[in-house]
Image (cartoon, rainbow, N blue to C red; front, side, top):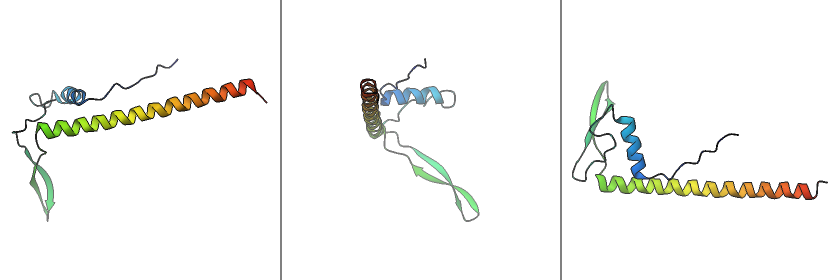
Length: 108
């Protein structure tokens, strides 16, 4: 019999832990760490300007307060979607059970 896997509740802390596990060997200091509110970030995005490839500076998102709020909202939305799908699954299972019962009572 095949085991059923059910995902746990997704939380911002879990996402940070995954980020740490994935990027620990590449970004040892920053893996899993959310930037502080007073820690601005800017990075270069390579863009072709005419014939030349240039790094155009782009400012990162705001700090920890905003990042964690957005991440928590994304997790809540994901968890609500999973719960709705589970409700649909239970409805389908119940309907299939009713159909099996109907066929066993009136097989013709």
